[in-house]
Length: 448
Ligand code: GLN
Image (cartoon, rainbow, N blue to C red; front, side, top):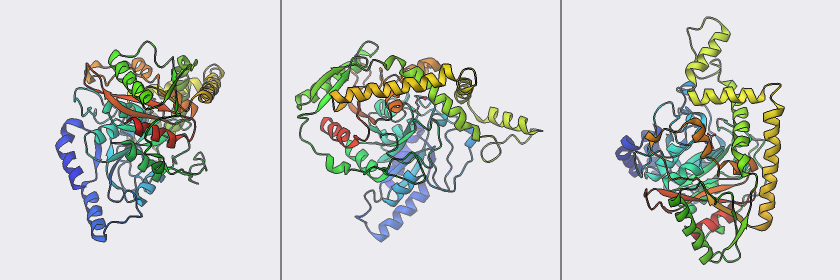
């Protein structure tokens, strides 16, 4: 803990990964644990962990990087946080993010822009960019992110770390402040596949407090690791993921990883995910619709920012929300409300829900031919902060990540090398059938 706090002190002025540092609390806890001596029954005993700032942590500011929750202190822990603590983890900070997890670069935070530790002129990815940067900067040994359409995998790829979005329902979402409830999933971001497996092991499982958490056995993820080769493993390569639009340096690094997998005995299966072109439109309709509904609870009444000068109720709602939400969040509330409104519901939301089903079936068919699918996480390495993307450009870079959320399947980013021109990390994405995390982690570890 001392070591990590030292790293935070030296790197944080450049990286700006953390909204809250729990220095004294964390030290006190570590000292008390030291006094009691190591406890082998607690698999994360004494391990410093950072939480994305939309996970409720009792008594600790939980802001969603939004002015509307700037001073919000929950009185309970998210289930994933309870489980980490029970396993002996020490929470040392809360990480910056795009406001309410809406974005791919962490530039949409109301408080600050996190920088990529590899090159401070570049973004760390988002929306779990603080979580990616804090791990990559060595400020902690693992962090929690959440992934609605790529927010764990994108920063993991840009920051050169391992990030896993588990199957929808694998980890309880209780205490995760919702963005798109049918898409959101908590997952580990870590320095190695083994560390990610260790964190997943602790957090996975059914929780009566989240009716969408799934009651299926949690396998022994660590026991699955340690395979010597990839004999018999069939890896699908969707042509829509490997075509034009990929930056050359990304393609080169990814192809080297595929060649390595082949050398290790894996068979490559060319296939097609023919609905990939529709994924972005489908995702943004569903995500914004759900966001507009979820964010209606921030009305200045029960918690969060309130405009105290407003004279009557509607004015109080409107002005509190106008002051509290940033531009991107407001844009999405407006679009989400639009696609849900009567007269447009069938044209947008209902149609998106149907395409979502077809996309899911596309994956089911693909997994009849292969064990895992491999592709890029993103078409490029981390862009520069000064490149300022438009909202539409920002939505489009999610092309390879959103499908896993729409289909509910697990996806991960594995660092496989550096781009030959930029020197920035490149992540390989692996996706698998629902609840195939053990397989996915074991293949990833073999390629690591
Ligand atoms: N970039 C996507 C969005 O803005 C994904 C975000 C996420 O996974 N939370 O919606």
